[in-house]
Length: 174
Image (tube, rainbow, N blue to C red; front, side, top):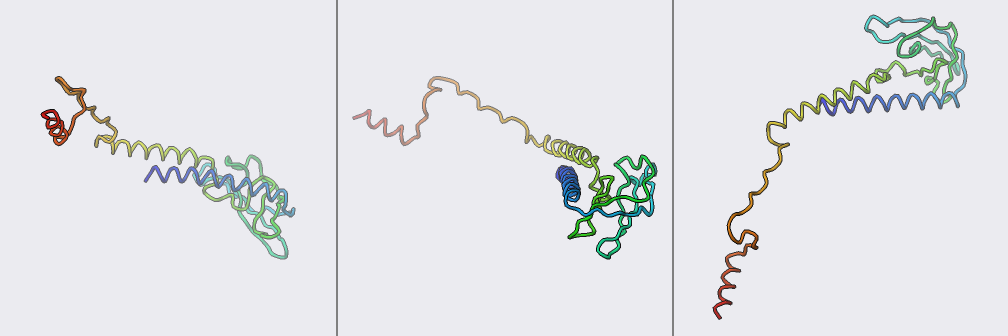
């Protein structure tokens, strides 16, 4: 179970990171630039609460949006965030955007961490060790014993069935 869960987590994290990268590239190319106001910063680094986040407020198509995104990279904000930030908004889905700092509207999701891949692989390896330890004492991984060579004359002969031997002996009497 740990093997499957670890592999699933590692693959899911990699796939999610790929999805975010593709989404950011698409929105940079096709998105509509909008100015957003940074309304708040939450400093979580050092408290075990994850990375720094900021709230951005913007308006598109007469609808107001207020979203929380990562402030900077996984290490948090290196500098105080600007008061105004450029976002590239998807015109078909205005709730989706990429910010000037490279983070998307769903960057706060728990799979958005490169650390999930080695964590998942470590869990999978641990699960593999548990499976090997559980199946090892059963003899599943032991080599089967080879057949002992026969001793005595005729050991290389082809063994015939009783009926074949009787037919041969009858043929020899004639």
